[in-house]
Length: 204
Image (cartoon, rainbow, N blue to C red):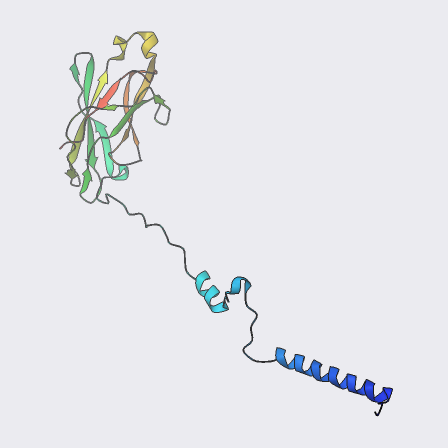
C-alpha cells in the first residue's frame, strides 16, 4: 500500500472546503428566493400601500332641515294689545317679515322673562299651551302672531313665587337659536316651579 504525504492530504482537505464554500455562496444568489414572513404569509409593499390609501368612511354631511324658515335676522318682534282674563293677561306676540323673501314660521316660539335686555332669565320659561302647529308662510312685510299668556304673579304666595321685577321677554322664533329682547316691564316669579307664562303656536 502506498502512503500519501502529509502535504498532499492537507491540499486535498483545503480543496474540498473551497468547493463547499462556493456551493453555499451560489445558493444564496439564486433569483426568486424570498424570506417568508412570520406565519408563512408574504406581505407585499403594493398591498400595504393600497390599504393605507383607502380613506376612512366619512359621516353624512349635515344638511339644513328647514332652509325656508324665518330667522331672527329677518324678523321684527313686537307686542300687540294685551287683553285681560281671570288672573292673567293674553299678549299677542307679533312677527313681521322685514326680509326680502317669503319664509315660514312653524310651531312654538320660545318665550321667557328677563331682568334686563341682556340680563338673566327670571323664573320658568313659557310652557307650550295647546294649539295646532301649522306652517305659516310670511311674505315680506306681512305678519304672523303667537299668543302669550302671562299670569298675574301677585296671586301666588310670595314665598312660592319670589316676586321679581322683569324688563320684558326674550323671544326665540320657532326652530331658531337666535333671540331678541321685547320690552314688557312687569313682575315675574323667580321660583322656577311656578307656571307664569304659556305660549301657543304661530298662526296667521
